[in-house]
Length: 319
Image (cartoon, rainbow, N blue to C red; front, side):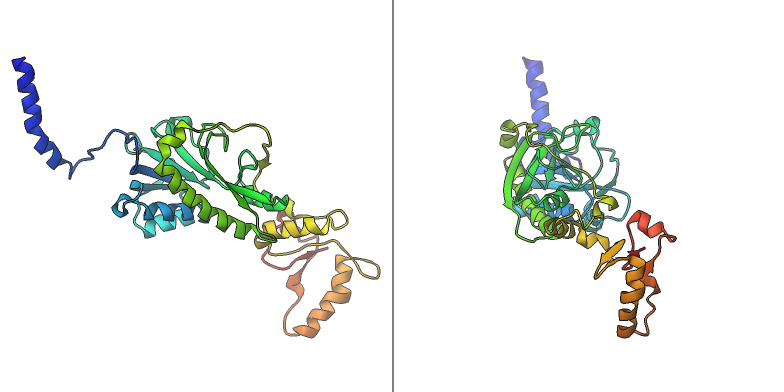
């Protein structure tokens, strides 16, 4: 008893020194069971920046849900990296090291890399992902594009816990509907869902333990896949596509194209692109802008490169 008492007394006498040391050493090594959280953010694009902005505003110095905030981003110059540097947030290259015991929870938004199980397991409360669709609909890299392209009238935002080895299959912690406005573009819808997702993220972090306890697994019913946008998706056959399909395609990727290509034009008769250019378009351009060379507005099949890639900064009319 005497030995125990003396040991306890020594420990009590040491407490003031330990408290003073907290100003120099990382005191909270164990995970917290509630906010404010020590958070590591993974992101890349402008959609992710919106969530990061809200996390910066919610740090504990402002009475928020975030105690500390650090960022993992890709090595190239992406919007998340620029934002983090502007706001003096610690930035880690991918893949991050020195993660053990330093963070309670991670947030992944538009990151584009599959996180391994060994990394996910380093976060006691897991990794959260903001996904701009009503999962399990539109799992994959381009849910907003496919929402517009397929004419969905309702979409939403889902916050899930990440599971290793697969994208967008984790249990749902939070999910809200969003009605797709008439005639909106993918860029407009993306901006609206980014803001909605950022607010939902803060709400989820405020009640994270409770939401994890009541999480629900995704079903396979209604699951669809949203693959990355590919130049081939921009091709259309006017005889086969309806006006509505053409309009949806324009609103989905119109801001990404930069040119429209065609092979034939039907006026009084069916014309090739070359005949249409030589007989109509070239003359019209010469009358309007005689000082401007029209050669850059036409690319024949022999040039090939732009047409094969489907990418150009000019208004190209392939022959």
